[in-house]
Image (tube, rainbow, N blue to C red):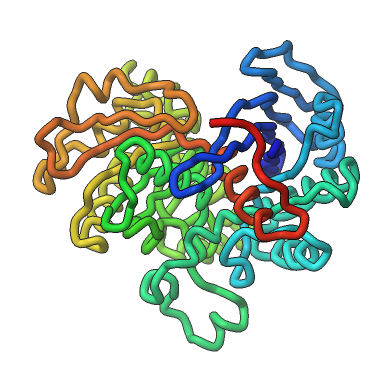
Length: 415
């Protein structure tokens, strides 16, 4: 089956058209050839289109793209003939209480995703626009599946899921810890399993998705049992522009002192904090590492805080899991910064975590879905890097759910 994956962000649209084949582990579909991939960046103004056909890049294109519908049509202009698209998988950030797994999209599902925009005002409307735009171009005969970021974390036990708020108040407003980056963490787990040959039944993993947005998840038997993001993606680790954990009283304190609404403080915490806020320079870890080497004290502090918070969460999740078999790094920083991986793992020899300096240093820019082992041979707590491949995971989920739908058709191609 030829599946188009659409990943709509607040101002971007990533896409990938790939063949899904039979013959994966346990009869699962597996990704084959990628025909076309790329991204539209800068939606809402002058946007750029990055395009790769069979892995070969084309010159960037630029035009005015006021909304996601326009972006979708721009992408589809490069997918002719449209008949090659047999199914579409959409990443949707928030599934709320309603969607604990992926779902074939119909009008009722669209309505429910729209209703959940209140919980994810920056992300769900973008996903919804991507779905609507794709349906307008492809029509109603091409089946589509919504794959929810929050679904992977629906296995959180009550103690990890619930905030210590008045029960009726929390229930009335659907306040709980949902967790995010679910497709990324699922991809890291799948990459680890493929690399090690594990069935995951007994494995205890700690997955770190470290990019501009960052989260860490405790995995037991392939299922999420604790994760750092909560009601919104603001909770947890220090991120590119997000503060991560802080005392909630800071919001009202700053609102009063700065004479602004709480919503403005929340915007500061999401857009002006994290690595950017502490360094006063940038949210790009590569630039911060260069600045720190040039003796920029605030850049060095931002990196130290980033690694300290991640190491603290790893320690906490070792307690949650009762120990772990492996730590798995992913995301732009997790995949490509040996320095940050080393600093996060520093001082954790007490739990059996010993990185191999040369393996760690050599592991950068892995192909999507591939993995590398970076710990020492004798380490009792192994460490891996997995190049997360969300698009392949979304495509697999799409095929899985269409198999049970009247609209489904078998995967084509050979192993």
